[in-house]
Amino acid sequence: MTTPDGELGMSFDVLAAKGVTPEDIDEKWLDDMVKRLFRELKRELSQMESSRPATGIDQAHLRAANARALASLERTLERLACLERQRVLIRETKVMLNHVNARQALECRLDQRLAAIRALPAPERIER
Image (tube, rainbow, N blue to C red; front, top):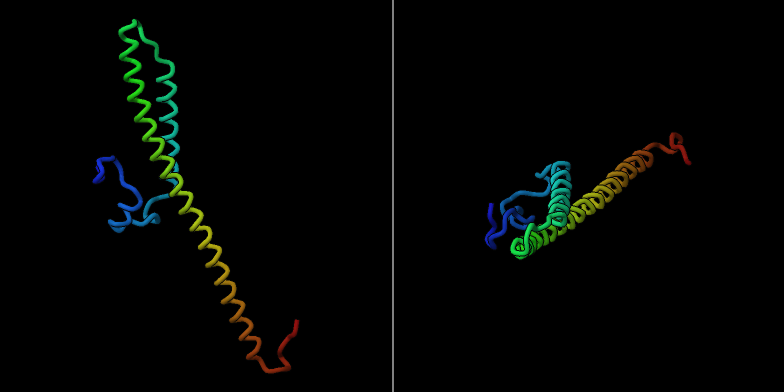
């Protein structure tokens, strides 16, 4: 799919505008895809580094092709790095929200128990 700026893929902002939330995307699958893309970039870079031209004329063509490939790899790496930064932010936000929710649930349970203890008649109360 092409975005309005002509790039392939969709950013989190575009997905959010379509009503897709990060929770709708399987985290394990996305982590695997990011790792696979990084491995593929590494493989392509290694392949480019090991290529040798046969003649002097081929050398100019190879350098031009390598320059185009490097530019493409750079753009892809920038997008992957941006995607990973967004994913880290989402993970940190989820962890923070989980801690806040857990604390709120604990406070609620403690308040309920304290209210139940206070509701008991005086002789049945156990002071600790």
